[in-house]
Each structure stands twice: as C-alpha cells, then as structure tokens.
Length: 226
Image (cartoon, rainbow, N blue to C red):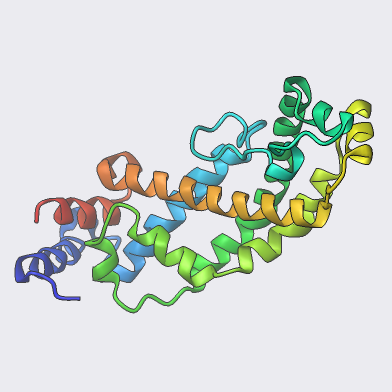
C-alpha cells in the first residue's frame, strides 16, 4: 500500500511526541505498541459490556438472533407452530443470548493473549487505516480459533433451556439439530464480538482523549491532523 509522504511524516511526528517532557515516561514507544494498546482497550471495553447481565441481549450491536432452525418459515406440525409462537421465541431469544455470554467468557482470555503476542507487519497502515482497521487485523490473526474456543461453552448454555414447555416443544419438533444450532450461534457470537470491539475502536479513534493514554492520544491525534 502507498502512503502520502505527509501521512508518514505525521506518524513519525506522533512517535516523536513521546520524547517530549509530558510523555517522558513513555520513551521510544513504537506504533506497534500503539496498535496493541488500541486493541487492548477496545477489547476490554467490549467485553466489559458483553459480560454484563444480558450484555448481548440488551446490545444493539451484539444481540444474537434465534437460529432459523428454531423457528423456520414452514409450519409442519403443532410442535413447530408452538416453536414459532411469540412467547416461546422470546424465551429462546433470551436463552440464545445467555449462551452467548458463556461463549464470551471463554473468548476474552484468548483475545487478550492474541493481542499480547500478535505480530504486526505494518503498524502505520493500521493506525492510518479505516476506523476498524485494528479489529480487522485481530480477526485475521485469530482465524477460527475464537469459534473453536467458544463452542463448548455455548453448546452447554443452549442445553440449559429453563422452561418445561420449550423443552417439550423442542423434543417434539422435527429437524432440530443441536450440533448445528450450537455452531450457528457460536459463529454469530464470534461476529458479534468483533462488531463490538470494532465499535469500541471506532469510538476511541474519534475521541482518543477519553482514554487518558498519552500514546494513543499522541498517535491518533496526529493521524486526525493528516
């Protein structure tokens, strides 16, 4: 990727700001460190919201929808008709999002570890990239590992349907494959986590002063001045 000379000089100036008296405690910090701090803070803020009670359910960014197989478009029996009824769909929606919280608990440590150990080939490209460039980098480095880590927890969460009527309906409904449902929900949770981290990254880039982090304030403010 080709960068304008002004952008490159701006990033270099941002790094240079760290040597000023006000930032003397952070000498020589690299842009790679800035990307890691951006991701660390974004992910911490995201998980802090998602792991609150009803964190997924109450989120406009991360709410998980009920899989199609738990309320498809074809009504082929009384059981499936009941499954698609509003009261049961509401209970299923809450259950799916509670299961998502179980998955997020397992995801949080692997995200933190990946950020600590990640290699960044071109930190300048991430800093000067789009509003969620760092999140895309994180998603690329994690690959399928987040889904694999969360799947057992989400699968267990989905088995804990706490309503006898729902259990009865599910036992009578046709084509209910819990393995496929678990995988579907886990993929949705993975996407929701990245959306949440990305939203936090975007907010930090828009207002780096709110972080009170001298490095992020210097680097991101310099980027906004390009």
